[in-house]
Length: 188
Image (tube, rainbow, N blue to C red; front, side, top):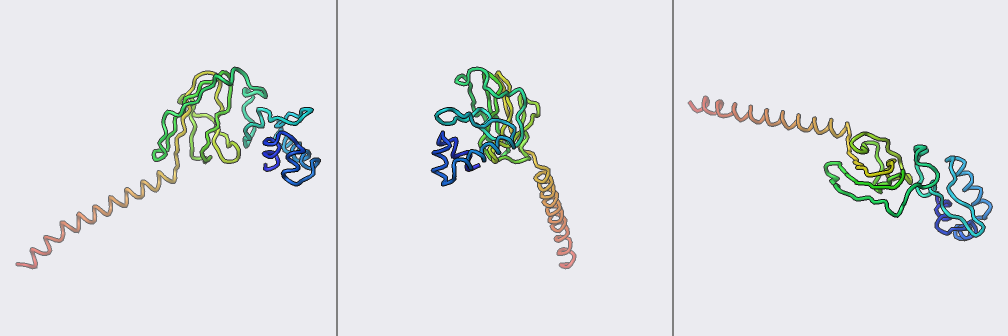
């Protein structure tokens, strides 16, 4: 990953090789092996350097939907993303997206399997992007993407906590009601 990042930042295999102190041929072989492993072209090799392809812009843990395509569609400059609601305590994020073509929305917060993505109110697939972030496929047009945090463990432990609190209150109330009766009978 460090090699690919250096190539993308430098825009050249030779400059990246100098920065990393490795042979240019080894760097080239590493980039080709990464592309073969992922099954996509990450770098466009030009006569005077390299540029990152749309597939190389974000690294996903698995192949994106075919509708995304290899080449961006529509006017990227007109795309808009607006964060509308963000409540980390409630586990809720709402984002409005307007795009001229199919896109991957990358949300730069930690990926965790307990986050549930919704696209226009319907569950959708979530991707791990750049090894750490959340990503969702968004078709062309105006859409609302929501992330909701749902954990069975959190629900279970909340229920156990409430049950324990209820039992403690019931025992305290029972003890409180019993205590005056004991004191009044010993006083007579």
